Image (cartoon, rainbow, N blue to C red; front, side, top):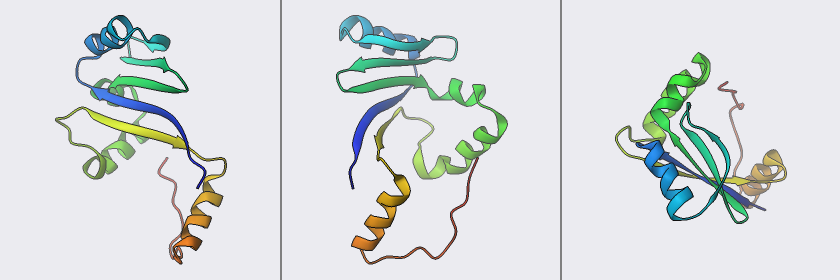
Length: 116
C-alpha cells in the first residue's frame, strides 16, 4: 500500500494554550486558524499538525455528522483524554483495500455503507 503521511490531528482541551505553544514556543507557522471554532493548522515540514477542541468541534458540526461522531465514539475516543489522530492518504482507496485484501487472501461479504 502506497501511504502518504499527511498530518497529525491533536484533540486538545485548552485550544488557545496549545495554539500559543506550537506557534510561539515551537515557532511553527499557522497556515489556517479559526479561533472561534477552536481549530488551527500548522506547517511542520512536509506534514501538518492540526489542533482542535473536540468538544467545540462537536457543537459546531451539522446534526448528521454529530450523530456519526457519537456512533463511533466508543470505538475511537475516550471522552476524558486528548487524542492523536494520524492521517494518511493513498492515491486510490478502493484499489489499496482490494490489493491488501488480496494479499491477505480475504474477501468482503457485506456491502459498504455510507455514514454521512
